[in-house]
Amino acid sequence: MADAPVTNGDSVTAPKRLPVSVTKPIPYTFDLGNLLCTDANPVGSASSLDEELLHATARDCAQGLINQLLSTCAIGRSSDGTSMSLTLPPGTTPLPREKPVPAAKPLTRWQEFAAKKGITPKKRDGKLVYDEVKGEWVPKYGYKGKNKDGEGDWLVEVDDKKEARTGEAGDARKEKRQERIERIRRQERRERANERRGKK
Image 1: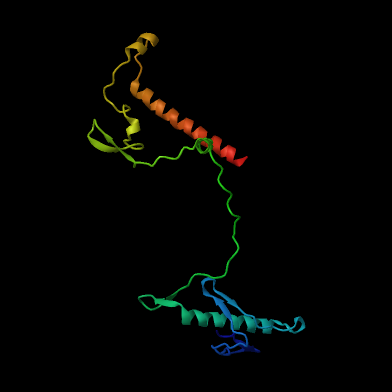
Image 2 (image 1 turned 45 degrees about the vertical axis):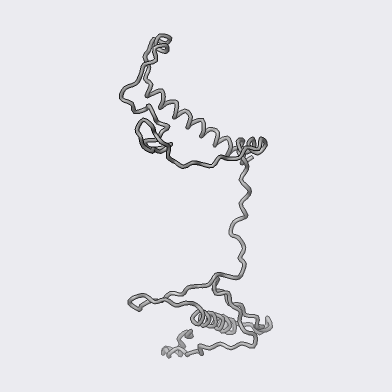
């Protein structure tokens, strides 16, 4: 690392070239994964500290870290040779967490009930189900899902009993769609209730 240019009045002289190799009585210890250089050498008494000494100590640490990086890490170069990259090893110094450890997620009412009754979750058998009418595998839910059967039929049977009771033929497609939407809304209400219980 080069030092800053030295000014002498109005003229500016070339910066003083400092040695690249750094030797200390107590060798530095490095954590290259975190770009950390630890200097265990005494700096001096509080009365003898000045900016120049601190600057020189920091410069030596930085130079030692760069030397260690260039001699230890794998170096990659760009195809045009204008830049280079270093592959750092994993860090060894434990660092404090930025955020607290997340609290355990509270159980939902169903999970509490299942744990009390000893109910274990069933193994899911995939996202597709065989539609015997179409003769092919279709999604259980979502676009063209099995749960939307009857909503897009071009011909539906009228419920005679319901028509006689209410005086209206009704729309079976619309009723199935409303029933599915209501199931979704009930599930969303349960999820919000579980979230409120978890926050208490």
